[in-house]
Image (cartoon, rainbow, N blue to C red; front, side, top):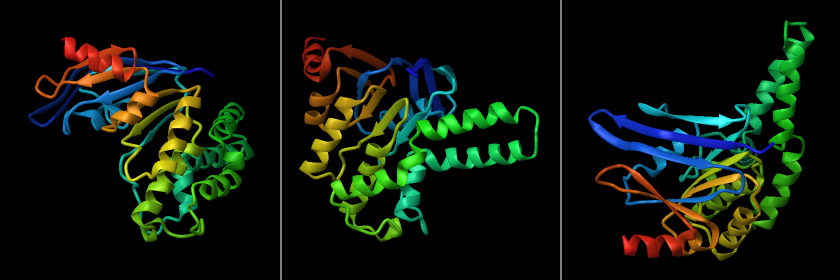
Length: 252
């Protein structure tokens, strides 16, 4: 189902610091939005707010339909002690959380709880939509395609920097969210990984918001740019791709 994410006048304050001020944007299906700005300008905070991980101090973020899935793929590999590569991929794709919800709904259905039928149907649909039915098979194939030759039962804390980067890319390629939020996804990728990431972004039917300092990557993937101004913490939207953004900014 097509999903649309809308941020209206989002303001975020952390202690005495204004992080974002009145930022608005709309992410519709096939939106390709690049977010740029200096380090510390609030780009990652914006993605976390769009993902629902942070509650804005002003403005609002809405999602239509409300049941649509939003996936934030963070900048860091986010390796956790004791977590295997299989578990990492399940967590990052949202399948693990969906499986837990499906298990709970199944138990409620078995116990005959009121409303259990509808809850089970919704949980099953979400699990299927996120690719839970064949994640293991797809995970092996994608990791093999990326040259990630480590065992899927290996703990992510044992991976090298390059292997961790490919694992993060695998989690992106395996994800089936309605809206994708990618934070510096090109970090530590080789040319082959970059090419696969670009193909993935180009083929998405879902909306995409990507934070990146990689100008070449932005030039090849985005069709609009949100420029966050560090002094004011406001943002300005430029349509027409990255090259058009550079020209418009120069003219301004």
